[in-house]
Image (cartoon, rainbow, N blue to C red; front, side, top):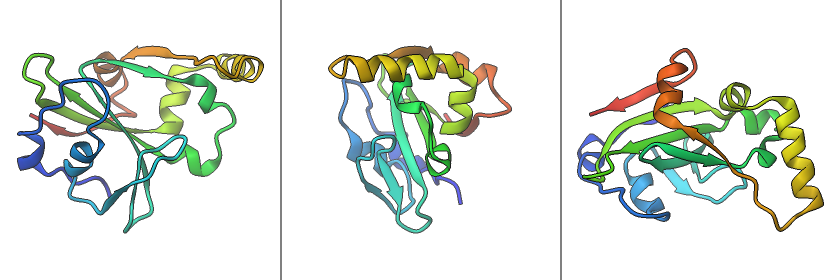
Amino acid sequence: MTLIIDKNFISKCNFKGRGGKENEVISCFSNNLIKENGMLFDCIDLDTKKKYELKKQKNDQWLDPSKFFNLSDDDKQITMVFILYDKNSGLSDMVATITLEDLVKIVYTEEHLKSAENHVKKFPKDQIKSGIKIRDFIKNNKDNVQIIWKK
């Protein structure tokens, strides 16, 4: 089972602003999602037990590669959900998904992941971030990314 978009809600929800809005983001889906803050995921579908990481962005997405070194098989199956919105209106224009495993394989080398993880071990107060232009990422990775809703 995949995510089911509440088209009425998502077309009216304003995603402008920094952070938060987790409840509004979860409400964009008709699935039985419950907020749960795991290290790599934001919510779980109570019916399917599938885990989702929800990202709302205009385009720039910042990820921490140190978290992705030595992912468990369960972690690899987490679905990354990108809710993209228009910078002026704040309204969503696209929702796309990809497994965490596929995202990591496309964006990072094993050396990059190991280096980031070693840095964070050595300097635990540091936070590592690498940026991707998510709209370009979606366009360039059509075999791995599924667009589940588009305005």
